[in-house]
Length: 493
Image (cartoon, rainbow, N blue to C red; front, side, top):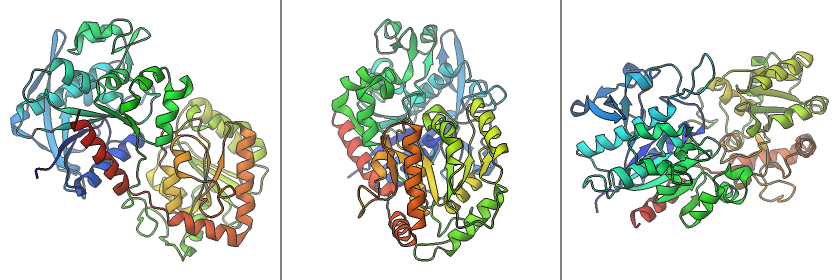
């Protein structure tokens, strides 16, 4: 029986380029799909930050100059390839100096503002992939596109390439990783991206409140849609708060909309083998975790002699979505509790400013690193006792699953993937693996933190909770099986 052929397209991918969780998924899920016997290949833009030498990139000779029309202009794409490190999966890169050689991925690092031509950049990426397939020997049966950057692939296939013998039969799966980032651009961009003008008319597939909306286009035209947890798949259909204006479109596709929880790449996130942490450790011997706690306190210039006090970690974008308004509301009371808190992340400048002010007043209780540091992120997972994720919404979330593996107990709000992965230990004493609060309120969050701190004082209870957490399995193997079923469903359309 011939292998199923799948092209997995993403704007970011570990280890080549990362902004958020999408990159982790793109760098891990295809490896699990490959193990299921799928002929899966990856595709992403060749950003200027990606080292051709480090990753062993080479040009694909027959695709050194693909012409892509953008209205009255023409841009050239060059296709490169390289293996995904430590994997037999092959990655294809779309190179174009105008669109992808600049610093930053989606935004200008100097201003923090999204690039004004992102609509053209990702339309060019999508078109380049289809032209490459059209002229190549390898023909996928299905394209799995992710987020707004790949939102035009389904309409291109259904509208622009419908009569093409090489492309017309390709099916699509479209994944939503975060519905808040929809890819909205001025209506006039439609004249440059090679799709019919009528798609931009009011209420049409590409139009959304006077703008183009690439995610909406993907939702309308894809054969099958999924998002990254079962709970989030329901939430985004139920209200404008979660559906961000697209809840009606999502409800109209409810028969083709599914939730599949993201997995964890345990080759990267495993305290027994993690080379980024100060001390490796394993279930049954947590002496290394205590040493990691001391190393973490030292890294944040906090007193290292107070190891009996609970230490809460946060690794996050500093954004409203992630619940930082609750953290700031509760900060005064939170820091009066007998605990310490470390925060790693970047985001909204207002949060930077206010957190710095709070840290200055509480230098022995709050550690703050306003940056992205992968090594420090691993050290927080290994050294903290608890991990706080008070999200307003959370499509899936990965850190709560990482935390479990490191015996770091999650404190979360019951939303999206957080609700699908964390059970409250008081509500379910036999299976609980964390502390959960329901309402999006600072006082509710403080109650949950207080319950966690009280449990920490009970050494036996905490040890049982840590043992249970570390035995959890959220590997990609289970999720990959569900994606295989999703692919089979799409191919039957």
